[in-house]
Each structure stands twice: as structure tokens, then as C-alpha cells.
Length: 124
Image 1 (spheres, helix red, strand yellow):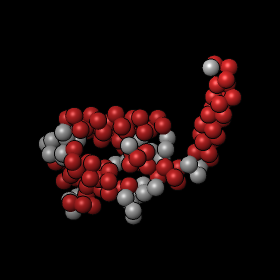
Image 2 (cartoon, rainbow, N blue to C red; image 1 turned 30 degrees about the vertical axis):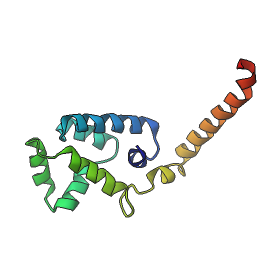
Image 3 (cartoon, rainbow, N blue to C red; image 1 turned 120 degrees about the vertical axis):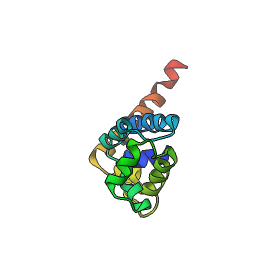
């Protein structure tokens, strides 16, 4: 979950969508075109990492994918690689929290927690 959070830069909607897509890939055991498109729409193309690791061209990896030969394990390894030190999304949640939308989201969360604490005696 932390790695998906890093790729989504802490955006809850992107994180939920990516989690669902990774679950679909896991249940199928392989990457399909529709799932790839969903990941790309959320800001991450796992094929970029796969091409780096395998040395294949993008066309070769896409051909393998169309044949059902890009296994979930490869996508999972791409996720680990891109979120590890030196990867494109390393510490993505921390970096995302520094953006204006990240700071606003944190402020909203903090306000909600404060409101919950202030109203707790009323509901107890």
C-alpha cells in the first residue's frame, strides 16, 4: 500500500484506483491492455520499468503483454523498483504532501480530527 501511495503521491482517488487495478492484475496473474491504460491514467506506466529491467524495447514488451506473457510478478517488481531509492516515485507520498493540494489535504484531515475531538464529549 505504501508503494502505491508513493506512486499516487498521496492522492486518495489515485491510490484507490491503482489498488483496484493492481488487484485485478494480481487476480488475472498477468497485465492486460485495459489494466495498463488504467495505470497510465493514474500517472504510472509499469512498462517503462520493465523495459529497463529486461533490456527489451517497448514494442517487445507490449507484444509480450498482448500475448499474456507479462506476469503480475513483473508488474510488482516494477512497482518495487520505481518506489525504491533512486526510482521515479521514491518517497512520493512525502513529496506529494509538500504540494499545495497535499498541504490542503493535510489541513482538511487535521481539521476533521480536531472537530471529532471537540464533538466527542457531546456524542459520548
